[in-house]
Amino acid sequence: MKSFDYLIVGTGLFGSVFAFEMNKAGKSCLVIDKRTHLGGNVYTKEEHGIWVHQYGAHIFHTSNQRVWDYVNQFARFNHYINAPIAVFHDELYNMPFNMNTFSKMWGIRTPAEAKAIIEGQRAKEKVEEPRNLEEQALSLVGRDVYEKLVKGYTQKQWGRPCDELPAFIIKRLPVRFTYDNNYFTDPYQGIPIGGYTAIIEKMLEGSEVRLGLSYRDFLKENEAKGEEGVSYGKVLYTGMIDEYFDYCLGELQYRSLRFETQVLEGCDNYQGNAVVNYTAQEVPYTRIIEHKHFEFGTQPDTVITKEYPITWHRGDEPYYPINDDRNNQLFAAYQKMAEGEKDVLFGGRLGQYRYYDMDKVILAAWEMVEKELGK
Image (cartoon, rainbow, N blue to C red; front, side, top):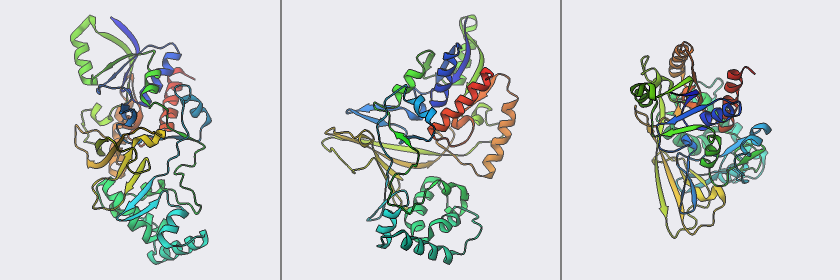
């Protein structure tokens, strides 16, 4: 019987970092994934010479020098800066909210003018303790920015009215009184030249990998093989924690996405920017990604993807955990059950039911590795 120290469920960033570090420490890993490709949601696929982000835009950014040095051992990163555009009907604005946004919206030039308008609108709303996302947004940027650039987009993204969403969601949106379209303030930003899949391949070089195999199917097959199967010491499970427990306490809620990708032959530049958000409620998609701009492509064709937020149902791909009180309480109950699982670790966005930026995924995987190795 072939023996491994770890069975890792999922070839996404968390599982791959964990496998890489464990291999360095002399541990053996068997890595499985229900998908037929590596990388989880960071998977990139080449089409017409363009690296397409199959599961939405993934832009690497971090303030952590150690994390930046770490990922650069697997790929060379370009100097891409995330500067999305927002379209509201026939109006076009820069994101994040900054002086370019305010100048276009109100015909003003100075930070003092922008602050005066926003303060005036905030005063009219009389929101002292924001109880929901709508009130939080109004208290941050006033009525104009909220109505044009926040309300419709957010309601499409989360599938419910803004006054029914928790206030903390909107706190991730930066507001600046400078002419700066750089969405992130992190000093290290970029896209890996040649896509993310190559990074995952390098991370998993020391592991045995089996694709197109779910955790449950693996368990059934391995049991049926008996002595011809494999043994393993511990499991790292990066799938949905409620699915692991057969949803015995109920389903955690997620938002899912539907991607509509088109190859536009003979069109070398569809929208002039990698990311264009559509903020009006009546436009069914939230954004269009033009993938070639992530790597400053000059190909004669282009590839675009429209993202449609959809309600998650069991069997759909979960993308965004809905971290409201109800779901957080349910996750806490599952987490308590997980603590009683001998030799099973739960990690990543789905195993820990939280939204992770990529650099935070790496940090969380390192933390788990260090705990496992007793460092």
